[in-house]
Length: 414
Image (cartoon, rainbow, N blue to C red; front, side, top):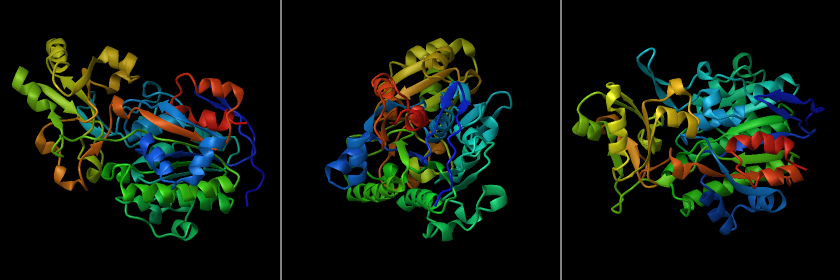
């Protein structure tokens, strides 16, 4: 069992956190649009989450844009928008180096994390993520435990704060393209608390199941039922549990079921000629999830005199819902100015935007195309296991963000 739990307050990014002497668990249920929870609850297969919603709190919150994994996980663990922490996607074009690069390194973070500061204040922090790509960002300056389900077998005490993960969890290391990858994360969180190894947890799941299955399918229902089992264990261990999502998920298909894709470089070149570089910030190593196709794209334009014409033309194209220049993207979409492009494009609920067909391997998908990135995946659920106090009940009625989850879980509960 846990030893004495620190109640020392800590501050980061202009927020003061005053934790109780109870385990704190924050979960990012990757890709979990609210309908996944509601439909599974309606089928009586999430009794623990239903109890959390009735006894504690369940509502909707606004995520960060683009509604992608790296962006929102970074916001959740820092408590601030991309404009502050600097992570603007999974992938971006570094104009100063003339390189297109993955944004998987903590080198790109421009602020510290709640996790690292909590550890410095005496909390025993454990970070478990399904995808290895997130571990470096989430463990930035952390004196604690941090490992991924994907690479759990490589965890060593000197580099990850722990070894023998598979034995601790009591389950085999899962395939990353599986629901088991997310369940391993939750089971690891339970084991860390049970064995007194952590009292302050961030558990980040993966969205393979949501990319692959609609909410009403049996595969999805069974997956969320299994999540619910682990939620019940965490609450029974005395933890205050807060859960949210990094983004939602929607089918991006035409009426015949085929992918609904606009290839922006092709259509821009056909209209204006060469000189357009389209960046899809959803791009990451996990091609079976989405084929690097999402509902948010960044455009770099060689001839700056064409920016306004391209913007005016793009906004009229079917399937495009928003086009912003850099100034507007910084102000309205909370983007870091040096890590976005000349234009930012968002697409409709059922549409994704890509580069050219040769950049996107749709043959790797497991099932039809389901993806995220735009406005239609921006609103996500937030569930807290304990009742909100008076101040945070009011705050929940304003414009809470998914990156307020640590604040609500630590400061907002009775």
